Image (tube, rainbow, N blue to C red; front, side, top):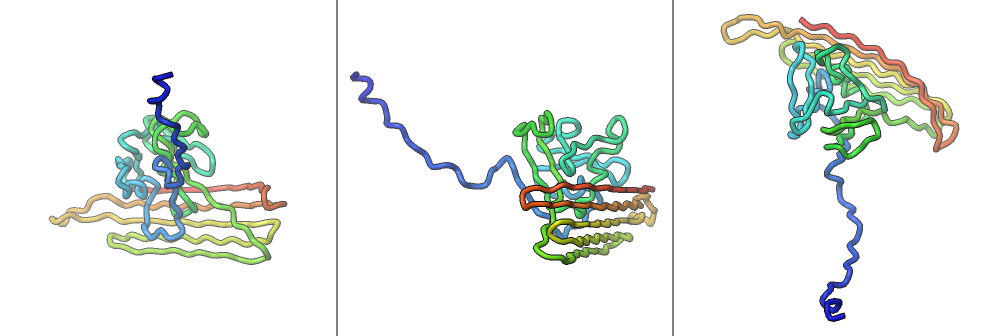
Length: 219
C-alpha cells in the first residue's frame, strides 16, 4: 500500500497527428524535373542513391539497401528485374512522369507487397472522376543540352460511368564530348505508351483495365 502512493498516475497522451516519418507520398502534378527513368528521379532525393547500369538505366538504393531488399511497385504490382543479375532493374521500366504519385515506405513497415527489408517505392495512378462528360489533358515538355528532349502527353475522356485515359511519354539524349573533343557514347532513347479504361458504377466501386508498352535504345 505504501509503494502504491509513489506510482505516477497514468498519462493519457493525445494521438499523434503529424506527418508519418516512415511513409512519404509525393504528387507528380507539379513536378518539373525531367528524368530518364525512376532511378534518375529518385536519386535527387537525399535518402536515395543509384548506380548506373547500361548507360541510362539505374538501380536504386534507399538508405544503402537496394536490389531484392527494396521493393519497386507499379500500379499495385511488385516489379522485378527483366534479366538475371539485375542488369535491367525494375526502375528502368518506369517513367515517373507517366504516373500520378509516388509513395516511399522506409524500412520493413509493410508486408502488403511481400517481404521488403529496405522498404518500398510505390508508383500509382489516381482514378480520374467526372461529374459530367468531359476531357482533361496535360502536356509537359523540356529541352536541354546534348540533345536532351522530354515529352509527356496525358489525356482522359469520360463521364461519371466510364473513363478512357491515354499517356504517352518520350525522352532521349545524345552523345557528349569531353574537354579534348573526344566523343563518349551516352545516347539513349526510351518511350512508353499506356491505355487505361476505368468503369465506375458507384463512387466507392471501380474496375480498371490497362495495357502498357515500352521500348528503349542505348548506345
